[in-house]
Image (cartoon, rainbow, N blue to C red; front, side):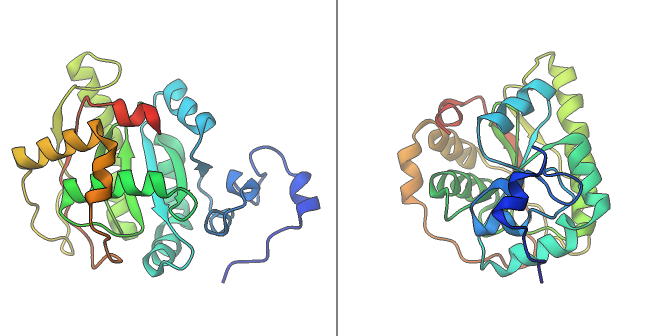
Length: 239
C-alpha cells in the first residue's frame, strides 16, 4: 500500500525536484501519477520541460503509460519502479516520463497504436522508448525486473552506437533495432514485416487513423516486441 501523501501545504514547501522523499510527480493532480511520486525514479509528467530536457541532454525517453486501477501497472511498479537498480539505469540513461491514460487519452491512443503496430498486441502498462524527437523505436507492455535490467542498458547502448554509426545527431533515419537476448519467459521474436512498417509510417503521418485501432485488454504475460524507428515526425510535433 502506498504511504499517505503530504498535505498541499507541505507539498508547497518541497523543492522543485520533490526532494529526497519524492520525485516531480508529487506536484501533479493525477491519482495515477501521484501513486508513483515516491518511486526512486526521476519521473516527469509529459510536457515541454521534460521533452526539452531529453533534447538538451541528448537522452532517449522512457515513456510509461498506465492508469490507477491497472493490475499489471501495480505489479511493474512493485517489481521495477520501486527498485533502486532499475531506477539507477533509468536515471542515468533516460528521461523518464509517466502518463495517466485517463488524463491524456490522446497520447494513450497514439502510443497504443504504435505498440500494436510494433508488437501485434497492446495493453497496460505501456512501455515505449522514444528518441528525444519523440520518434518511437521500441514498444512493449509489462516487463519484470530481470527484463528491465536487460532492456535498459541494451537500448541505451543501441541509441549511442547506432547514432555514431549513422553520423546523425538524431539517430539513423530507419533501422531495425536488435533486441537483447531472449529470456526463458519471452516468446519467440517475430520479425518485422514491410506491411507493419508501412502501417506505422501511415499512423505517424495521419493521427486520425488512431481511432481505427481496437481497444486492447490488460496485458497477458510478457510481450515479444520488435522495434524500429521511422523518420515520420509529424505526429511527434503535435504531441
